[in-house]
Image 1 (cartoon, rainbow, N blue to C red):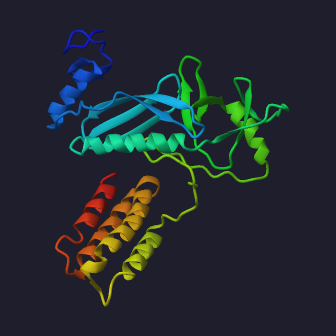
Image 2 (tube, rainbow, N blue to C red; image 1 turned 60 degrees about the horizontal axis):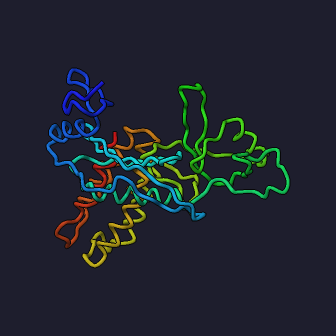
Length: 289
């Protein structure tokens, strides 16, 4: 089916009660709907080297949606995928830079370790006559193939059947395995990064917030000399609020965010724009809800 607008490209996107569009015409339509200008000046194909010096090529694309601008990187002749979600009115050049950084981070760490092929290892993952072991920290993408009606895990850009992954886990028999399922648009696990248990209880988040704030207040007053350091430190506490929004009780997250805002507004200071930046960040976090 051809696009209803340009009449030449293949239609890949259906908008109910509007029509069938190719990606380009769809983005034009959404740009008008959102009242923004499209960004067309970006590299559609980029090449990036991974941690082993192997080059990967990615197809970069953008899809505008009501309230969202989705930047995607899909590996050409491979299975790596990365995403960044921003608002249509945000700086799209920053979003592209963020996407590039996610690719670099994702390729900079490997979940699989290549093993010697001198001896055959039963519980190794075998791919193209090579065998791999699982690192004790890693990441993967859950993928369902409709044609085979099977689920696999994409690890280091390779499709790993669930059975093979389970077999490789026997190398850690007797250990515990923690897991956290995250959206593809969230940050990727990279080199020198781990997952660790962290409390997202609302009282703990407020306690951390007040403790951090106390480092910079003198008798309840915040001096302009400490404003930048204070904002940077409190940003980490607001990141905990984001975790509560995404993985905990969303209504509690709104309550905690409003408590943070009320506390920040009450602080006596000699700074013209304090606490505007922090208030905006909190609004962005609880706006997820």
